[in-house]
Amino acid sequence: MRLSVVLAGLNGAIAVALGAFATHGMAGEEMSHARDLVETAAHYQLVHAVGVAAIAALAHQVPDERLLRWAAYAMLAGILFFCGALYVIAFAGISAFGMVAPIGGLSFIAGWLMLAGAGWKRFSA
Image (cartoon, rainbow, N blue to C red; front, side, top):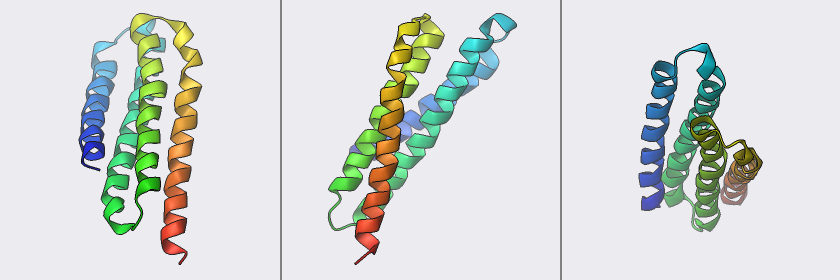
């Protein structure tokens, strides 16, 4: 889970930096769509970075942490595909990456469901 903590921290820092850049560096009406995309991506990236950190913190409380490990991987995949797609659209203007974003969204959902399953498994005994 060490890698999950490291990646959570890096993703949190990247999200804050890109969110600040969107707010302060993407001024003007012509940048409004790109700014909105970056703000949305940064928001989701930050929320899921915290989720990954929480999963890593919970891992030592669960006898079989495999489901938690997969939950963290799913959230990291969601960051890569969902947030990454929005960043590519915003910064490079390649709108075809919009087709990749749903993969990330499904990864986020899968991660949260795996976290729920790990909790159910751990506390139902």
